[in-house]
Image 1 (cartoon, rainbow, N blue to C red):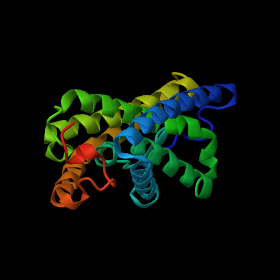
Image 2: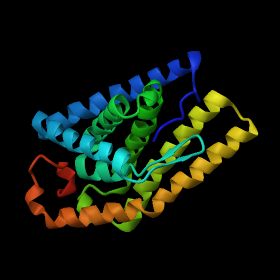
Image 3: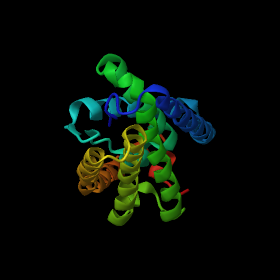
Length: 225
């Protein structure tokens, strides 16, 4: 998803550098934990897969400009469940950067806002997963309700951050309110699809038990905590 160019400009855009830096520091902490659990090679492999997936989501899946941003099928909770928080976070940032550098250079000034908008909701999904998924449950055994909760948390987080940047940049004029509301309604419609995508992908993963312990997926996908 992309904040519209010019929505936040001038000195105001400095805030996006600070929020992106904060998200980056937390990602480094998650990466360190991941390396301790499964090693550097596993982190690198999962990050590469996630980055390719994210770039494909941005470029190949349907996406529409709506209101103050664009509606994308980012599948953040799916990436988290398959690859873990750190690879998903780094992959989201890399996929966004690759797209901006080679296909949408006009989005580069908004990179700090966009990366914050994608990563902070992912961190919220991790926190929620730690709370609602029992330590004895592997991710392949998630219920629809749990998948729905994770997906809703991610999409709602994205909408909340887009709304924040829009209010921060353009204020509370009626036109801006309508644009934010239109985007929010359109984006939350993804919740109708993503939980089903999560369960479908997890069902496929369950049949591919050879991935268990391979380092190409998060250990929690097949194993209890």
